[in-house]
Amino acid sequence: DGGITQSPKYLFRKEGQNVTLSCEQNLNHDAMYWYRQDPGQGLRLIYYSQIVNDFQKGDIAEGYSVSREKKESFPLTVTSAQKNPTAFYLCASSQLGQTYEQYFGPGTRLTVT
Amino acid sequence: QQQVKQSPQSLIVQKGGISIINCAYENTAFDYFPWYQQFPGKGPALLIAIRPDVSEKKEGRFTISFNKSAKQFSLHIMDSQPGDSATYFCAARGTLVSSNTGKLIFGQGTTLQVKP
Image (cartoon, rainbow over all chains, first blue to last red; front, side):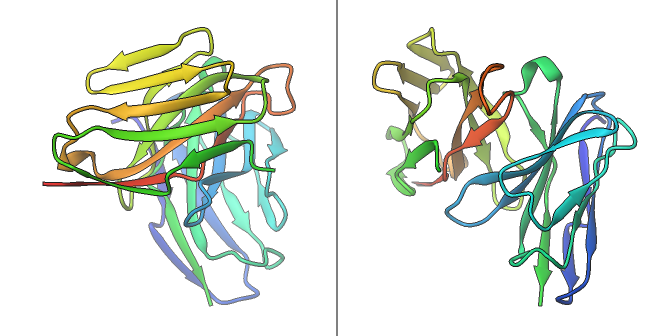
């Protein structure tokens, strides 16, 4: 059953703690992405990666970090430097030549109090 | 700077009616214009996409109309059904020579409710 897995679905953390969100895909896609979704603001790109061991900042990378050690995995760390971390986080992947067609995971809702 | 503006923010349509969502972009360096559909608690899924050299694309009840000179494109859902109730996002993909190479720029989203 091919697709993108994000875990956990809900995550709660105390302010000041770093937290890592998991994203795994078995679609054999080269490109992977992290988006943040807030009400009324659409999807905003945090980081993206087109190849293993390489990634680029998106529009709102401050306070986040990523790694791409394996093709199928692209974890996102929300650091304590992120001022407003509470949000719905979406991971996606695509083939390099078809980046307009991105496959999304089910998302992780992070709440920081 | 928001490069893709979407309207309306929310839309209520009666079953069987036509739902219309509009988007406008500010950058000519886009080469694909997809629409995504998102149900509550789920990730978005590609619904339909169009290239700028085509003025209209239809897939079932869903049609994209594209106006290159006006830098606008819209999604029409014919014979809208309660199962179409979801959030819809338009997007634009940056071309290889733009600062947004391969990236999707999303609109703010439209929440559609189709009443039975």
